[in-house]
Length: 634
Image 1 (cartoon, rainbow, N blue to C red):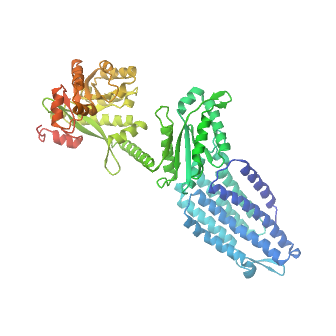
Image 2 (image 1 turned 30 degrees about the vertical axis):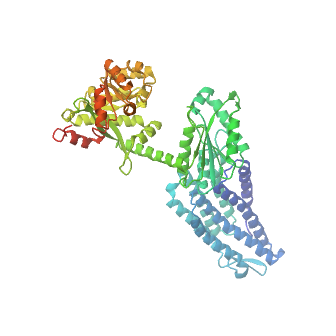
Image 3 (image 1 turned 180 degrees about the horizontal axis):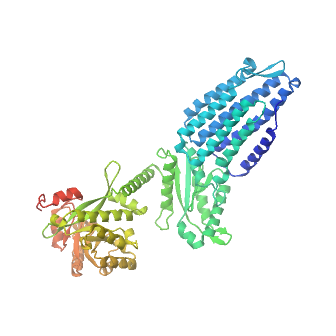
């Protein structure tokens, strides 16, 4: 007689799992569908295990064809369970190679063929004289399980670095549970314990992978970032996925205005609204006031976006008041360039950042087409290059000479930041500087450039080269740092050079906050740094404000210089005269021809800088070219 004692508790636990599985939100992804299939399969296995064993024990009550049918159904399902657990392992490992999956399906198909033909061959079992008899290939049950368990463990070992520790432990655990059940079933065949070990495996999967709380946002019924990554991992391999992301504009200030609790209540309401209104899409809350709807290309996305816009024109009522929120949209559809989860998430994050700003000039929506995706990819590449250059301290400075307008001799040089990509090519500053400013790296780059300028002065006799000082740019973000003076003077002490040898250049954009910038400049002036106003004419061009700053030199922006040679009006000469009368020296940038040099000298410019004299040079080339022995007469 068969021992059924392990069967009934298994059934109770299985139905408990099913109850929670169907009453909680769940992601519509292959892993979850596989798990649901495994639960249904387990119910059928238990049902046919009980029926076939009971029929075999009471064979005199059944016709031979009925015994064949019941036992065949059980064995077909039994082999299917081994393959189902293996398929779930492949889902965890994100192995989407269909050819690989088909190869691993071959043993399963062969085993099923052996079962289905057993009524003729008697390979797995036979009914002799009305009784059930195990066939010569009965152990194929155990070998098939061992094959799939060992294959799963082998793949886990090979792909262990592609999944996190929690996933690795969970996957190992349920495969080990199956291995133990297979061994026990082999050693004690009359004890129907394999179902219990399978149930343990299903419980492990539920706790480690299927528990909805792992994928649900804390603030409502939308799925979280982890769930988004899981769903996206599967979606990117389809040609018809579509993502509509939206973000609460100026999220940080909104939390400060309304309070964190009210905003959290509003987010919970938004999550619930998304789930109830867009049931054909998967809604996600991605943190920081960012949301996403994931669906298919054929959905009416224009209608979905319009409906969201209309809803956010209304208030969100929370427990302690009402909240009015504005949103910006970022839309992504399947693109050849977006063939990985990381690429989609990076592009979506950048796009949501663009539309999520408080600035009124921020776009209301961004649709990521092939061109915009390429631009964002290039920005990400630049960001990675910047981060790598900062980590390796490989940021370089090039020097461009500044000449005396009357003698045309080099008297100073401007230190210009240069970054190389992984191929050793120089990145144009107008590409990497905006990226550095937007991502908070410009301050670190500025520190490196200043330190390398100090090192250059320390390591070379710049007087012999003909240089009286080096100009170093300060970015607007650097100027906002309260410890700027301490950092710069610390570098001076490290290299034992006087502050007078470095002229700090700031732009007009840096002095929008008059009081703070005045205080910053006063501190640096007290430390001995001379100041230069860079790119005059590109910003607010406030003469009254400029004269209250202790600048020693005004650098005319190259656009202002070039515009003068288009019109030749009296504005620029009068501006130069005014600066000279106020006691400033004047430097003209962008000098490219002898005519420009002569004309700007004639209107009173003291210093000239531009490609007519030289392009920015690496330090070694600059020193070699301008050292006394090699210096070319100008």
